[in-house]
Image (cartoon, rainbow, N blue to C red):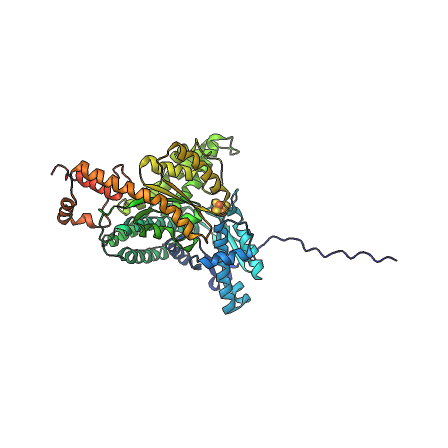
Length: 511
Ligand code: SF4
């Protein structure tokens, strides 16, 4: 009898599913997270410590993380996916070397934001799972935090309860992280004593960490929401930050090119080797950087739903009521951000109006083309151009990112229509620093010339001299404090707006 052909053993694909993380394990397990700046991450740590979680951010991204990520995941992945996966991989490798696989699987879980949609952000966790397979750490636990639900309840095993206090703590820490970051970038280029901003910033972040750590317990549901929205707890803490910030002496007469950073979410937010440290590099090149707040992204997430309800037939039984509720939610969100800004003397930038971003982008990029930052990149560039808030736009685009490629294509159309818009699209793939920075420098040279010409034009127009301004500053020492508010007088440069302000608001032009 002929022998039956031996069938190959097929091992079917099984999707990664984390083991449960139980309530009883909570004291012994550390939640790892990352992806924002050290300031945001430290404040988030305060919010999680407050809820009795052990939580630790991953070390800041380093160049080696790119190589570690490339070794283990899809080679066509976008550079933020490769960097963030590599960062987790390198951390786990080191821990495994020191403590062994079983201990690492027991001791840590990784929490990351999840989403769905056309960009790879919806598949980050797949890349992480692939890397865990490659490391032989399939038992390592990885959990997703949905971006659109405040109360997701206790997850698999109940060890991680993504409830209102947790979500609000994380969102509030992101807002406060944004605001102190804005203060930092507004101040550092003008500090008189080098390094003072960094020192005060670190003190303030520690102070705010403590504020999140000691956040009072106001229950698990709507009571805690009401408290977060109405209490003075956070505004008082930010007022203390403002007092500390006052210690920093600045010289607002330094002429700097103002550069607005836009781009892909992770790349624009990151501060470090993942984007060639471009924000610090720009400061060294005599610029003032406008960093992108994460709050704009959260605001954007609120908006598409509003627009969907406006433009489409909704499945909701009460679409009008829902629409009104969403508009109210949006107003509350902006109101909260503005309340925090006010506590910081209104120094941090206002959030742009999402309707205006959409309207500005409309002729070039349809708002329903989702993925990445969608139409916002076009909207932000034009917003800055029309409102004269920056001399140039530096857009950080990851290598192998589909949404960003589309946005850069549309920007060619925008620049054709507004040829004087200074726009530097910088492709970042992690290992071509010189090329990227030299590209940026070409546009920056033009931006610097504009900043200087604008300043000289205003000195002529007002008839003021540097000596006259210095004399005024001696008599009004508050003008040398980092908390001195320089209003926007329709010029991009800080020094130019400062001169206009002294000339016309303080009457120096007539004196
Ligand atoms: S926006 Fe681009 S870079 Fe960012 S996750 Fe999506 S595909 Fe990757």
